[in-house]
Length: 556
Image (cartoon, rainbow, N blue to C red; front, side):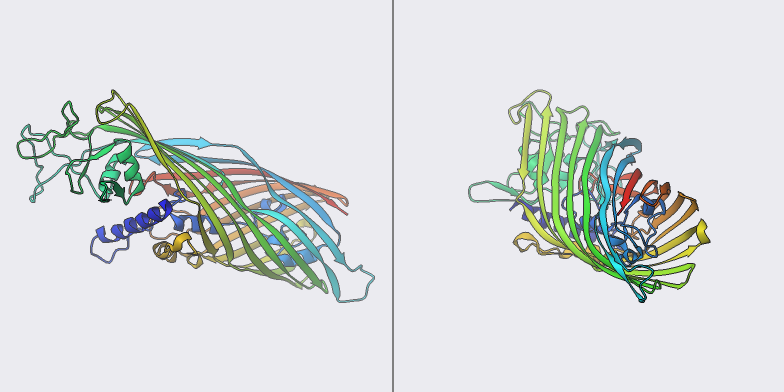
């Protein structure tokens, strides 16, 4: 199966990277690519970095909600908060989301953005509390059902730049080796391929069956061979070459100098290759929460809930290379994949009121267990200037991979928080959360394929502390809110700060019959890296996301 071959290649590539690292006490930097269908450690991490966005009220407070109650968001964050309700409620919270990115690749900066509309939260609370005239310390409780968006995969990324093939052979003394015309001889760098063709040349392991059919270990090399980007030049050997890197005669045969070296087809400084990729990502994770929160003597609130998760993620990638001074005009690599799955988790929590002005809360969410199906289609096309006997003017080939199923366990979460009330003027709240991302695990792959190397990468992830804080000020029926949140970097051994910081502002009105809240939150710091293929130069992407959420609720 193609997906089996792909996983085997990924594992071999990762193993090779370990061996080319210098023999010192240095760990190979962890390679996480969130938009590579074959980078399952990246998939595990992206599905683990969820958040409890909830209603506009909670978003305006920076997401701090562990030690707060009386909001539908409690059904997924801390069910004990449902114990604060004294009447039933229905609310819905649409969100306008504007993800934007600024990418830097090979010295060039590129911006991109898109607009998306989704629902941050939708739910109902059914209250069964006892009236003030009832003499009982047990004050009843509330049952909540909510649909909450836990992760947002809406994103649009574009990056571009130019690379130059300018690596040349050297002798044992470090001097350039020259051909008879005093031209330097091209050398491919196995640790940093500069363009797609060079990458496929460096990963050209293959076997030949009795019918002389070639089978490649690397599917991308297979596609490059089928589209005439590379060819075998040592019959029966393992050597491949890009025909456009070296000079060829009228029949497409490589020209050798007097010493048997192939002659480069471009000048000493190297030829420019224009590279560009666009990535469009859609979907998210929604959680349906069935939760109950109880109230004992208006001092202790406790609750529990069951979460049913729904995952949908669609990624479309298109990578283009345009070399110069070659018969190849352009190659286009498209990689489209979908991930769909369902999952389950549970949450337990409590909130205590030791004094009238202080709330202390804590909550624990179990690991989430997902069953995921992944589909993928990869296509490579190449267009040429002038057809020859060994290639047509336009070639296109691709693979439709078999559906691939696997299981994922994301890490548990432990949170605590405090809320201090400023009389009737409002309150200040804050909470912290610990997530050990190394607790994620991949298993149950189709055809028994091993995830050992992927899980080894996951084991290198860090435990992080996430912090959220917010303030609400009250002016009769009006509310004004502000908040800040910080999510720690789970990857310590790379040069990119993948922590996330965001600020939020909000406000609203609350009457006896209804409420309307508005919140705007802005991601102010989030970076990650992405590469078009393994070993390629990495684009540094700065993620800037702005979202506006409005919540409308009715009491009954």
